[in-house]
Amino acid sequence: MNSEPSALQIELTPEFQKRLSSLAKRFRNIRSDVQSVIEELQAGGFPGDRIAGVGEESVVFKVRIRNSNLQKGKSAGYRLIYQVESDTNILFLTIYSKSDREDISADEIVEILHAFYQE
Image (cartoon, rainbow, N blue to C red; front, top):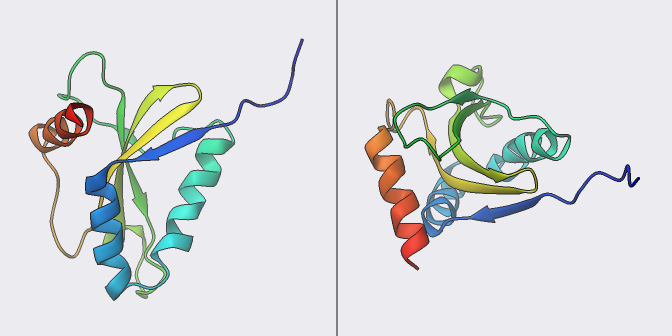
Protein backbone atom coordinates (compact mmCIF):
# COMPACT_ATOMS: atom_id res chain seq x y z
CA MET A 1 0.00 0.00 0.00
CA ASN A 2 1.29 3.43 -0.92
CA SER A 3 1.31 5.84 2.01
CA GLU A 4 2.72 8.72 -0.01
CA PRO A 5 0.39 11.71 0.08
CA SER A 6 -1.08 12.33 -3.34
CA ALA A 7 0.09 15.44 -5.12
CA LEU A 8 -2.44 18.20 -4.82
CA GLN A 9 -3.29 20.07 -7.99
CA ILE A 10 -4.41 23.66 -7.49
CA GLU A 11 -5.99 25.31 -10.50
CA LEU A 12 -6.66 29.03 -10.75
CA THR A 13 -9.63 30.52 -12.56
CA PRO A 14 -8.96 33.59 -14.72
CA GLU A 15 -11.13 35.48 -12.20
CA PHE A 16 -8.78 34.47 -9.35
CA GLN A 17 -5.67 35.38 -11.36
CA LYS A 18 -7.09 38.78 -12.29
CA ARG A 19 -8.08 39.60 -8.70
CA LEU A 20 -4.79 38.34 -7.24
CA SER A 21 -2.81 40.44 -9.69
CA SER A 22 -4.93 43.51 -8.90
CA LEU A 23 -4.61 43.04 -5.12
CA ALA A 24 -0.86 42.40 -5.43
CA LYS A 25 -0.43 45.97 -6.68
CA ARG A 26 -1.70 47.25 -3.33
CA PHE A 27 -0.59 44.46 -0.99
CA ARG A 28 2.82 43.09 -1.90
CA ASN A 29 2.69 40.23 0.63
CA ILE A 30 -0.55 38.71 -0.70
CA ARG A 31 1.15 35.74 -2.39
CA SER A 32 2.93 34.70 0.81
CA ASP A 33 -0.31 35.26 2.77
CA VAL A 34 -2.13 32.88 0.40
CA GLN A 35 0.69 30.33 0.71
CA SER A 36 -0.48 29.41 4.23
CA VAL A 37 -3.82 28.23 2.80
CA ILE A 38 -2.06 26.24 0.07
CA GLU A 39 0.08 24.52 2.72
CA GLU A 40 -2.99 23.66 4.80
CA LEU A 41 -4.71 22.21 1.72
CA GLN A 42 -1.59 20.19 0.88
CA ALA A 43 -1.62 18.81 4.41
CA GLY A 44 -5.12 17.46 3.78
CA GLY A 45 -7.17 20.12 5.52
CA PHE A 46 -10.04 22.14 4.13
CA PRO A 47 -9.75 25.51 5.87
CA GLY A 48 -12.66 27.91 6.02
CA ASP A 49 -16.42 27.60 6.03
CA ARG A 50 -18.45 25.74 3.45
CA ILE A 51 -20.68 28.01 1.39
CA ALA A 52 -24.25 26.87 0.90
CA GLY A 53 -26.38 27.63 -2.13
CA VAL A 54 -23.89 26.95 -4.92
CA GLY A 55 -25.36 23.61 -5.95
CA GLU A 56 -25.47 20.12 -4.49
CA GLU A 57 -22.40 18.89 -6.36
CA SER A 58 -20.25 21.91 -5.53
CA VAL A 59 -18.11 21.81 -2.41
CA VAL A 60 -17.09 25.44 -2.06
CA PHE A 61 -15.30 27.04 0.89
CA LYS A 62 -14.57 30.61 1.93
CA VAL A 63 -11.43 31.02 3.98
CA ARG A 64 -10.26 34.11 5.81
CA ILE A 65 -6.64 35.05 5.29
CA ARG A 66 -4.75 37.62 7.31
CA ASN A 67 -3.40 40.53 5.27
CA SER A 68 0.15 40.90 6.58
CA ASN A 69 0.37 44.35 4.95
CA LEU A 70 -2.26 45.65 7.38
CA GLN A 71 -1.91 45.74 11.13
CA LYS A 72 -5.27 44.07 11.64
CA GLY A 73 -6.50 40.51 12.09
CA LYS A 74 -8.11 38.08 9.68
CA SER A 75 -11.42 39.98 9.76
CA ALA A 76 -9.82 42.83 7.78
CA GLY A 77 -7.88 40.53 5.47
CA TYR A 78 -8.73 38.58 2.35
CA ARG A 79 -11.42 36.08 1.50
CA LEU A 80 -10.34 33.24 -0.74
CA ILE A 81 -13.10 31.19 -2.36
CA TYR A 82 -12.17 27.69 -3.50
CA GLN A 83 -13.87 24.55 -4.71
CA VAL A 84 -12.87 21.02 -3.77
CA GLU A 85 -13.13 19.08 -7.01
CA SER A 86 -11.59 15.86 -5.65
CA ASP A 87 -9.10 14.71 -3.01
CA THR A 88 -6.30 15.80 -5.31
CA ASN A 89 -7.79 18.78 -7.16
CA ILE A 90 -8.66 22.22 -5.78
CA LEU A 91 -9.91 25.14 -7.84
CA PHE A 92 -9.25 28.66 -6.55
CA LEU A 93 -12.28 30.66 -7.71
CA THR A 94 -11.64 34.20 -6.50
CA ILE A 95 -10.03 36.30 -3.83
CA TYR A 96 -10.99 39.72 -2.52
CA SER A 97 -10.04 42.12 0.22
CA LYS A 98 -12.59 42.58 2.97
CA SER A 99 -11.88 46.33 2.76
CA ASP A 100 -13.06 46.32 -0.88
CA ARG A 101 -16.29 44.40 -0.50
CA GLU A 102 -18.39 42.99 2.29
CA ASP A 103 -19.27 39.56 0.94
CA ILE A 104 -19.72 37.45 -2.17
CA SER A 105 -23.04 35.91 -3.12
CA ALA A 106 -23.61 32.27 -4.00
CA ASP A 107 -24.87 33.50 -7.39
CA GLU A 108 -21.55 35.21 -8.10
CA ILE A 109 -19.69 32.02 -7.22
CA VAL A 110 -21.93 30.02 -9.55
CA GLU A 111 -21.19 32.58 -12.31
CA ILE A 112 -17.43 32.19 -11.80
CA LEU A 113 -17.75 28.41 -11.95
CA HIS A 114 -19.94 28.60 -15.04
CA ALA A 115 -17.49 30.94 -16.82
CA PHE A 116 -14.56 28.67 -15.93
CA TYR A 117 -16.17 25.50 -17.21
CA GLN A 118 -17.33 27.21 -20.42
CA GLU A 119 -13.72 27.85 -21.48
